[in-house]
Image (cartoon, rainbow, N blue to C red; front, side, top):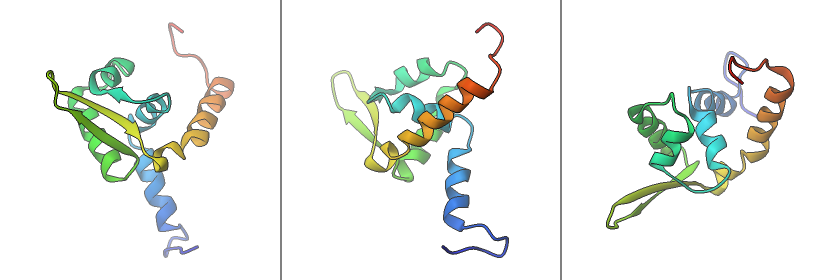
Length: 110
């Protein structure tokens, strides 16, 4: 495994940078349960703005983790689904969710 001068593997570093971006984990977690349209993703993460969701979806598509599907309609409908590469993150994402349920405090109102 290659390492740079800091001792980090560039691939590992790039993966953590991508997955560590705000909202990325929640978007991937939501897509693990199947294909979702843009508005469904907006509703699933209410604090996430449309603009930020669009940016994250573009990043995830460019990284090969999801596919953007366009149904010309009418009405036009855009949906997203995980690729094989994205689905491979399933055990990791479910592991993080299990860890969170065990080790983090509930947020107010939960």
